[in-house]
Image (cartoon, rainbow, N blue to C red; front, top):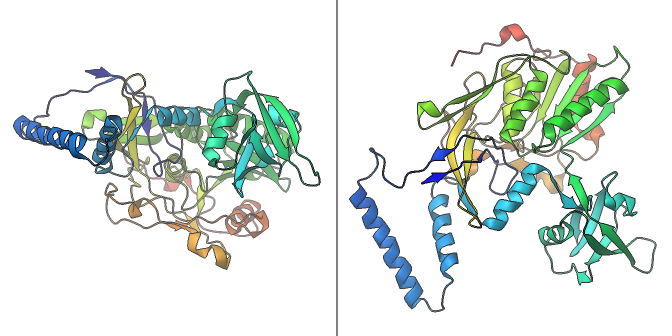
Length: 447
């Protein structure tokens, strides 16, 4: 039976943002491989499954839903493999595709849940919500006359999204007003902001990448171009690339983001069970930052695609990595659609390796300079990420595994020790043998 393999994923945890790469069509055979258990044993076990299934259908205390029984059985089979293999029903598959595209029909607001109601964190510039006058801290109580009370945040967000050029009516409460306001908004194409930036002082370009979706590389290129025009020629000391708490995204975007800063060399390789499945991805000439200093910030929440970028720039001695050990998600998942309306299979099919041949599975990327943050007492219990090695059933790494590390980022940049260290290094206020990295020390073996 021929199925088309669309995507390969490297996600930090189930439900997190994912890393994907377009793959070639793959043939999936119904038979057994030569080194697997004998067909008779396998079919005997399948008969056992069929017997159990029929007994549950016939004798369970309440009539079960056959489709849910099958789905649960599939999930159980995949959960027994590793934490990242799973079944996605049609809705979850669609949601994943929306997430990785980074664009959808919607209003253009960042929201959170507060006291059972939807609170606006901020409207996104030049979107329908911003044009309609939606403000930060507005409380959304109703969507098309339906109360949001009792809905989860995901359910409320799903209702606000919809086809482009369709209308939705919001009822909002605003501080200082005694009566609610109703606003009708027409949905437009919204693009997720995966790249944010600012100028630190007047001489450092700070760039934060929050996920790797289909828009990330182009957004990053535009951001670098914009920052270079905003900083006086000759004054730019370097770039701070903040990948902290970035759980991943598209593998091809991780590769193209790495390529922005590299002139040549391998970026990452993926290696499956069979040697012929090995793939290598190399940089093309053209460093958009023109060789300026780069510092990459990582922490325990930096996973998969983030680790690919950090590992590539670290191995090539193109950047100094500062912060705490990353998550350690070094496996690759392939997405296999299961036919119209049947969802998709997420299956672990390979590990990935940095240019020097390191597998970061269950170990993570160790920073060149470790910087620990001061964590408020009330947050200390939640300030660390346990990492890939803590997940039950995770793939074993090469050599000694490492636990997770600190993932707290102070809300005020003035309290951010890693950010301050990066800025001080770029300005020469402090020195460290790891900065600037020497390309002469980069020893990348031929694979």
